[in-house]
Image 1: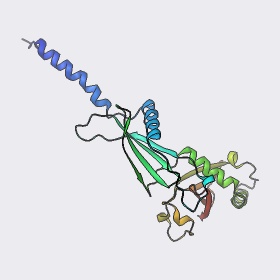
Image 2: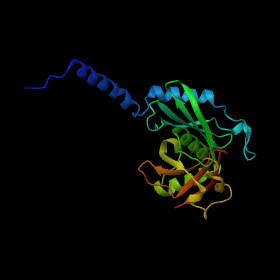
Image 3: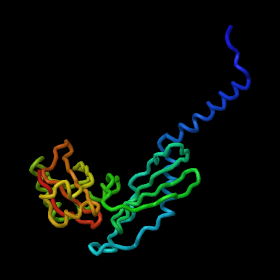
Amino acid sequence: MPKILSLRTLLHCATLLCALPATANNLDPLSAAEIARATQRANAATPISTIRSTTTNNANIPAPELLLVERHPNAKGQTARLADVYTYDYSTNETIIDVVDLDTNQVISSRREQNLQLPLTTNELQRASALIFADDEQRSLLDAEFKRITGQTLSNPAQQLQVKAFVFHASSLPEQLNAASQQCGLQRCAQVLLYTADSVVFEVSPIVNLSAGVITQNIGF
């Protein structure tokens, strides 16, 4: 004869089942709404320094760049919904890491680190491209390279070229760098790869110091 569970047992099981989704949700990636809320709280709580290194002009300081927002890993037994917000402060060349408690909407910790360079954002890629295309010396090199590859004239780089970039650290090519490029890592830099529309790569790859707003050199392949 099948065993009949008591009402008390059934209620206890129901309580446990109801509790499971809440625990599982703490492990889920952040939602778009949570990311927006974490970003807002981090921006409100963290003053961006106005101190600038002597190597750059105040008028050229880029705005703080939101790099990444992700779920903060919970310690054992911790149930709070936490978010890590990474922002690059170009005025000091530091990455700010804010931990936001999404249950209370409070920043529970904040620290700054140098030499911590997260991947470039879309905005930074666009700015690196704009700096290259606006530089007369770089434009001459691009024109010549495009002509060599395609036999055509480069009249509109933004439309005729594909651009990819990644964070550049001086430690990756220590023997090939000039003094300006050796600051990369301490400052935020991008190595830019340029391609034709049919994905033929250029043999020159500019290094862009996004902190200073200059092209420091070209790396050849």
